[in-house]
Length: 254
Image 1: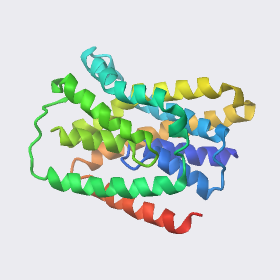
Image 2 (image 1 turned 90 degrees about the vertical axis):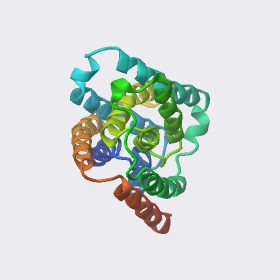
Image 3 (image 1 turned 90 degrees about the horizontal axis):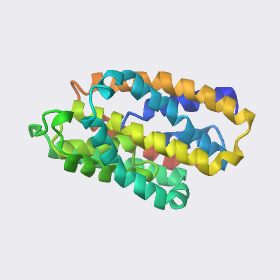
Image 4 (image 1 turned 180 degrees about the horizontal axis):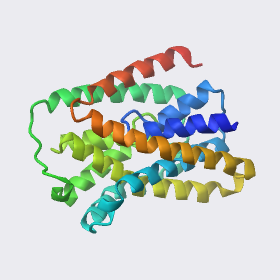
């Protein structure tokens, strides 16, 4: 992998981590387009640069994260299903990293987005704010997030749609999704480094640093862009995009 390729993948990770379009799926597809093989080293690179996106969340929501412990407890509670299943199914999940599966999941998720948006149309939100969310609702969103272990499903997409189905407004659903990335990405990154520490070398760390910086910068931009977009739009355009990009990759990727 070259430095330029590391920057491109960092940009893809930062932007797509918080947009409901599947960051893992887009990294796999971008790597396929650049003809980068999905080796163990490359997979660890993709997981590790997520920490740049993680830092973007901490940077933007630093004041909210230090305001009290109730929200932090709900985030940890919501993380439990994904954390437990990820630990138990680590090897199985790694075998799913295939471009064709990503394409099918992008299409399926896009259809789900459109159907859910139409189903909740004109229905008022029943959850006032994140502080008013119950632990049961947080856990339910966590259960839905566990579907994102399948590449192409989209962690942010699953949690946002889950939040909407449970009565949250678009802004709160998106922000809870951003914040839930903290325990999820931190644990996934740490565990992947622990399981694969022997395959790193100095060149890998250089590319990881470059990818990390790009991921942080574009993570900040991605969060701000999505929050601005959903003030006047639904998530249907993301559903259409997912379907279109999934079909294109099925047609043109080997």
